[in-house]
Image (cartoon, rainbow, N blue to C red; front, side):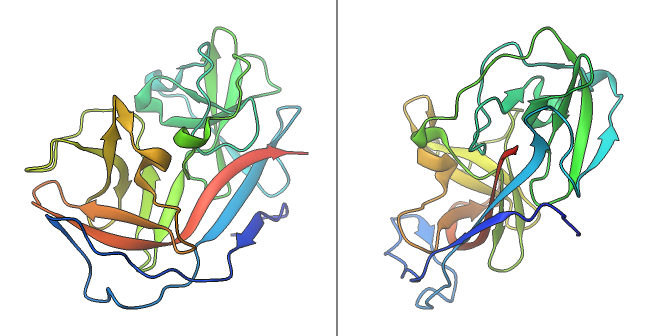
Length: 228
């Protein structure tokens, strides 16, 4: 991947040690290993004028489900700049969208670890949107220490984890099933289940047929912002 706009990378300096797992939850075999601090990456793919930043490629999407509605000010969980919105419907997976310079278009980053932007048609206005509150902020993509790639959930019908009705599927992963977050009222726990309390962030994963979760460490976490 060649990005002419270099992402901001913030490194913590101390790695954290794992805490004991709650009942019904397991650690991987390497529980006593000290892990490197999670690398926090901020990618800025779209300019404030609605154009793709240098190094990012725009791919038009013309499916019926890709006409999005951005009229409700719903900030993207992974955005560190205002006016980056999560648009509907969930089938479009428009988790981080900017109002495009082209009329009635948006530019959306569907995979923050890539250099691709999806251009979709927009119906209605594009709402002015603030940054998500601290509780609701979460990386759009996380990469676990074993290379597993997990992307934030955008609605849809997911099953429950057996025996854990208080858990909510927050990220879909290429391995290990999904990342599960505890519910906090009617919404997931802070940061969508990504525990940022130690320099090495952690999540809990499980397949949909599993009866317990496994604690895993996050190597990289991807956020987005608007390019200057």
